[in-house]
Image 1 (cartoon, rainbow, N blue to C red):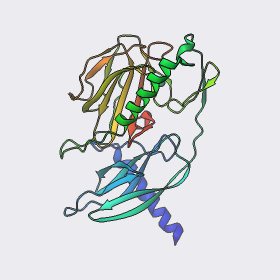
Image 2: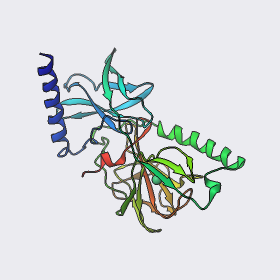
Image 3: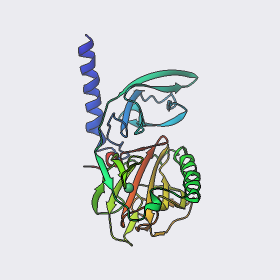
Image 4: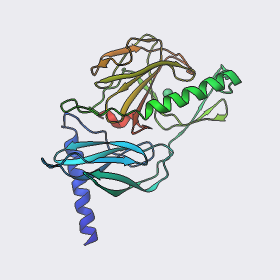
Length: 282
Ligand SMILES: [Zn+2]
């Protein structure tokens, strides 16, 4: 009986996955691993009931209506432990917990040599600056903007620039022999001055010039989905401005900690960096 039930669940998940590619506001591909995205089915959409709300810990999670079902689209942090996790779901005044499983993924290792070792072993001044910036970026990552009807979050992303995919998401990085944080984005090798395009429609959440990320633009796509474009040579947008998919946000470069000109592109979902490749159609 249990086996049959499980097969039915799998059949439903397949049905969702096969419909996604044709939906206008497509969901990212599901990948239940650290750095991936989980789809948690919350129940059928009803005309009378409001959309359910969902949280992972204290962080609100995007809930999308897809083919008659409410689906929580949950970003899974790279450092999230594998195993069973609980999603808190609120419908009206009621709150319940739904569990979902996160499997393992071993990302490859990458060794990088930087000529400028001051960007690996930091001076006290640089260290203080970098720590302050990381805290500011952390606040931006948790930003939440609810979207109005008709302006739903569109996760059907385009690559911000055409080029060789140089470093994939999740690489366990060693800079000049020193282990550092894993790679939290996707690097696209592009010459300096290449136009960098917004991956989807959204609002500029912030622009800044950081020690590690260099000149950076954050685009808020609503419901906790944010994209980040780093190492830019020039920024062409202002905070608060709305951008369309494909609109230029700046020009590529190598500002911040970069061994050569490239775009570092990160995607943030419910406060955590997830694999941008899940948002691009294969
Ligand atoms: Zn990168």
